[in-house]
Length: 581
Image 1 (tube, rainbow, N blue to C red):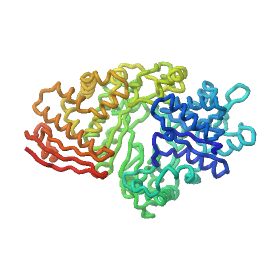
Image 2 (image 1 turned 90 degrees about the horizontal axis):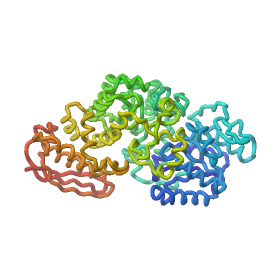
Image 3 (image 1 turned 120 degrees about the horizontal axis):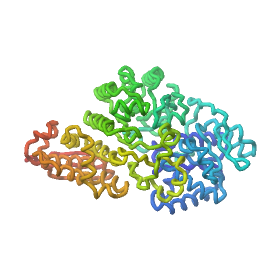
Image 4 (image 1 turned 45 degrees about the vertical axis):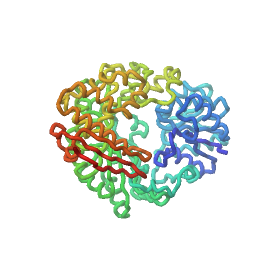
């Protein structure tokens, strides 16, 4: 029986989605002689089904584990659910402990508003987890545990002692008992180059973007593991699972060029046959570093651009040189490195002119060939400069249309969310005209990301008026957007052709019928690529396939029909040209 049970909000068993921090803390406890286990919420059969049934089933399973202490790893989409579970468990006599980013950012507010939460361990826990449970075990004082929030004499006590930063090179590898039973070490898919295993490459971001809480959580201190330790971690997972591709997990991996170059040199020295990805700021890479990283196995990089407006770049304290960013992205693409980009919109001070510039950059980057670009609505996370400035003006949005997808259980916990704006600001909306008028824009951007080779022709119909493009997207499909967020998401994902048929019906250019057929073909090809099971599509499309293959503009497509056979059999995709008429 587990005396200490960690609960993590995983939706499915996947080795590359395991919560690294929780596994490290549980491993530290096992090394110190404690009984610790991990419960992944996907182990509850009713997870993401009826919410109240799930809460009951989860509480029952946790209680039956024999745990005395239940520790939750907290992230914002699950915080309401984790607090509800903590309340249920407290009623059953268990001791509840919160940790992780969301609890750390709202520690005092949570302790004051939620009496069923016994403790919050804020910040990095590797130094404090064992001393905390030793003190709990022998009844000694908790006052010396840095970053701990606890209760005493009817008040919340916040230990103010500064927590020492963790020496990342001394962290253990995960204890096999915590996860190995759930995964087959001989699974060939783990050795596939498309499977990327996260490696905790370092922590901390020295920047202070107004919308981001990362620097707050990691105390703005940039750290990178030593080259020796990063390679050791790579070799560990390679030996255990045969994994050959890795994700260097660090929000600002390339901040220190000298350290990153040393990592690359050591990978090359060890002659590791690996590929890897990373995340970086685009103003923290150079052509020289890119070439070194590519030589050492980098195949993909993700970059946060946020806004295409120079004015907004200053207001959100991102401060990117957008012209240099475009040049660097072109250099990456020319060197066969795939690129993913992150954009945001709906900032409080943003104007339509700013937004049009952001959309122009977003669409142009996809047209240029970046692997993917996401557009997110600006959310209000705790401990960010934007949230602190606008918290009083935020209003609850019960529709959750500000989010890309629905959040499990938020409707059932609406009373909790309404009573605690400072704890749940991400469920709230700043009612500016721009945010009100463009709240579905991220769905249009998602569709453009899915079909960039054909969507560029739709956008061309608008002659650079990206805002009008969105207005037609929204106004032509009232039956989609008048419903809840989950319905919008399902329509966009599974029925894009109906949405764009409604848009294209506004235009009378002679190539519109061929454009509709091209969109239908691209949608079917994506269905084949994304299929999890064997799938065959044999269809006739109203355009000449050779024009498409030769990358001719849609305006010059010849009249004709193309019959294609597309299949996915045994995980392999194939397409055969049957006939052109």
